[in-house]
Structures are given as C-alpha cells and as structure tokens.
Image (cartoon, rainbow, N blue to C red; front, side, top):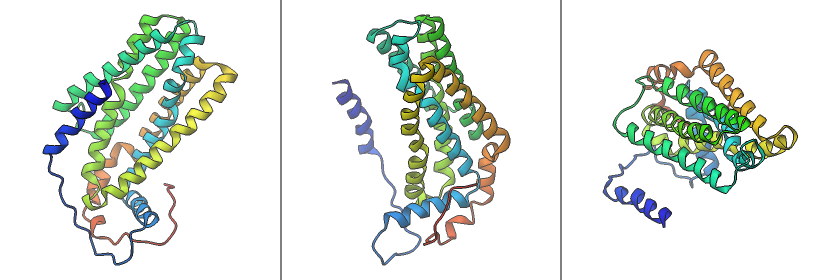
Length: 260
C-alpha cells in the first residue's frame, strides 16, 4: 500500500506538467534504428569534452558503492553486530530517511554553485560514510551503524542533483533522449558486475572487509577523477563548445569507442 500511495504521489504532478515538443535537426527517411541512435548518443558524449569524465565518475561510484547494499544483510548477521532482520530494516529506514530529508532540502537550493564540485563532494562523502558503516559493523555497535546509514543517505542525492543539472543544461534538448540512454546504460552496467564480484570476494575475505576496501577505493577513484581528469572543469568546457555541437550532423555508421 505504501508503494501504491507513493507511486500516485509521483504520478499526479506529471498530469500538470507540459512536456515540450522536440524538433528533429533533420527529417530522416529511413526507419529509426536503435543502434544508430545509441551511437549518436555516444558521439555527443565524445564531442562534448568533460561529459566522459562525469560519466566515468558515476560508473566508478556504482561499482564501488554497490557492495554495501548487496552485502548489508550478510554483514549484519555475520559481523560483530550479530543482528537480525529488525536491525537490517532499521538500518535501511535510517538510510532512506536521510535520502528523503536531503532531497527536501535540495528542492529549495543546491549546495554548490559549481555542479562538478557537488558531484565530487557527494560521491566522496558517500564513500566515507560507507567506510564508517563497515567500521561500525567491525566494532559491533548498532547505534553507530544507524547513524552512519542515516548520514550515508545524504550523499547520493547531492551528487545526483548536481550531475543532473550538468546533463540537462549542457546536452542539447534534441539529443537528450539518446544521450541519457547511453549515460544510464554505461553508468549502471557496473552495478551488476559489482554484485557478482562482491559476493565472490566476500566468501574469501568477509563482508566487512569488502565494504571497507570498496569504500576506500571509491575515495581514491574520486580523488583521481578530480585531480587528473576533466571533471572539475566539465561545465566550463561544455559551455565553451556549446554553440558548435547542436549544428553538427551526428549521424554516423562508424564504430565508436568510449575511450578518453
């Protein structure tokens, strides 16, 4: 019933929102091709320097932060917490409360004028709280676990809001469907891989160690992205080239790769 009610809360506002009509750059006579349009989305990301760095940051985050939620039930049972389903449910409630509260705050304001900084801080913060959740399990203190699960819920909404603004303001409207399809496919494909590997590795070294190590690797990943990629300057780079890309014919039959 909660799912049904919240679904209606999400759907009803859409009835009052006007969806703009998007004009195509040119009329295409041939039948629409999924492969062709997908590759056009890839081309847009390649052409607009900086988007690839942003995409890589979230792909990495999905890979390293996924083990927490995959292994959390096992960690609660097998670690020093020696918990049960009640502890698991309580942990998830605190995590979602954090996400809801920060989302309500973000309705009225962003935390950073520089959206790239918001992405980096949100992801780095999420990794820190994940690391501390692992420490709480190692210590065996459920109160600390609940506290860091709550604080952990604050991180991803911050990163997502600032990231979404970059994508929606810097990608031409007529390309957003194709580009967002590519974006979601690549960013989320790492999650199932992480699910498989985290279980296998947890059998070898334990759930707590997987979570702590994955969180540490995510922190390192964000630092590398910030200091050695185009992530900090993604908006400046996109604004500089914003007048060129929308006028290009992005239709191509050539194979493209997502290497920087």
